[in-house]
Length: 128
Image (cartoon, rainbow, N blue to C red):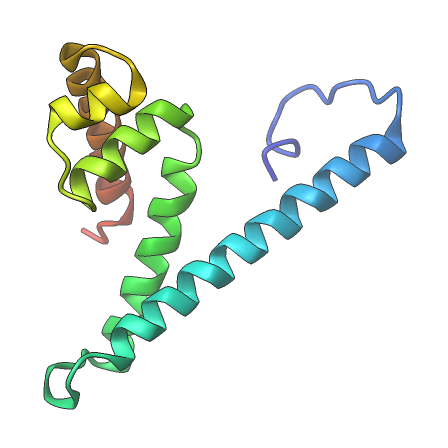
């Protein structure tokens, strides 16, 4: 899709290699989304029936998770890891800095960068 939105298409010197790379990317995205959906459904199954969200809410949450996963996948690996370790695993900035081998200031910058991306994603998903 991104290729089709460009004003000028790049010259393809090895079309088969290009198509193989596109197919690999599509397949990788499919499996990543499938894994994310499975994890969400497992978490949902562990939720007591009275607390389970409506089917509409479930669909919105899953769509949002997939959009978030896709957005975070555009970040450099250390930025994505720092953000996920902070937000999902609850690691301190010091723990993340030690794990990544960077300063705490750099970890803060990484988390701010990823957070800003999430805010922009939230704005793009907001129907208002």
